[in-house]
Length: 127
Image 1 (cartoon, rainbow, N blue to C red):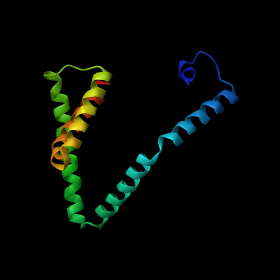
Image 2: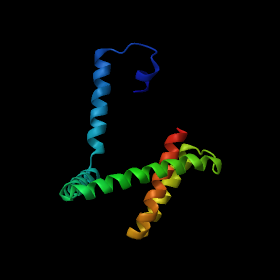
Image 3: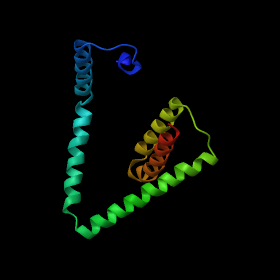
Image 4: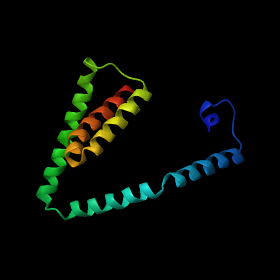
């Protein structure tokens, strides 16, 4: 697949089809039990949100937007204190943050989720 991105030579139709088949297979293998379970749970949560009164849904949307805005600001301002890290360090830190939040249960997740969101936004800004 790396050859496609380099532009060194033109690919034949058979080579392009082989690359597409490989990508399709990779996509199919990625959607295992865990992904299917998350999709099912996500659909149920969306259905519950649809049942809420319109005013409450608006407040939730506004609160979510405000929280993401604050997380983006925190990510931007953290550059003054913490220099950019390598992708490997970022992956380790985000994994550790998720593990700690998950181990602490719901109270930990309520603290960890905004922090991890800000961290991931910072990582995206560094990319």
